[in-house]
Length: 353
Image (cartoon, rainbow, N blue to C red; front, side, top):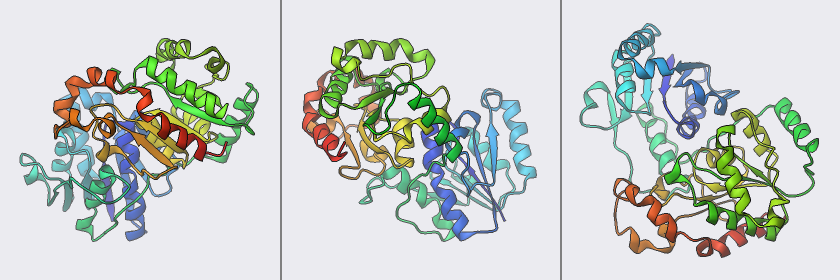
């Protein structure tokens, strides 16, 4: 039996959808389980023992309809028995349409329903603490008679990677016997990034409460922005921040984070990766993102989160993400650190640093 799971685009999405493979492996221990993903997302699923092959979707297929068509025909030749299209967009619709699979599963959309043998309607509410993003993905397994209420993404870091990152930290002034906290200082865009001055106050509170050593999660092209946040911190806070120590690749970031006591900061892929590494998290949600969907595995004192809606629900009054997105930057001004100061303090104390 051959099964293909399709999840293109973002790193966080690829990691979240990887939960399907453990369930598929349990149901079909001898099946070939393949994962179609964008090439830049591979680091978060490396070494996953439940995935047999990665089928890489590149920028070339993304940008050229002719190349995409050729790619879809290659997939057809693989003769998959089952295709689970988690991405459910035009490119994955086409790939699924051309596949030879007898069973084709995706989310219900009126314009693409004819492509699939099973069209699953997304849930809008859940009592599970794993969040709607996971609940809805698990629903895609029901046509295969796999019923699971909850699951958690896992990232597999090797012992060699852990040893290398340990040496990198200790030879650059980090004492692993003392508190170490990773800060997700920047989001994936301006409208997903907590205002710099507010983030600086959050970091000041973290250092004042824990005297932790602080690492920033950023990439070289974001150095200017990360430095701007550093400069807004108090002098005594700056002394605890190791600006020059950061992951130069995604696998580097993962192995560094694995040594941390917690990750705190902007919602996004970094938070979900930390959770998949069993690292405690405190997430600051963007003012327009739906917290119920992406608040994966909120567990008190383990994975905490805050959203402006928690404190000022009257600003939302039933509006959708699409309606709130244009107001994101204006709403951020109202999302002052004092609103969640006590909750962050309780989280920091729960770390027992």
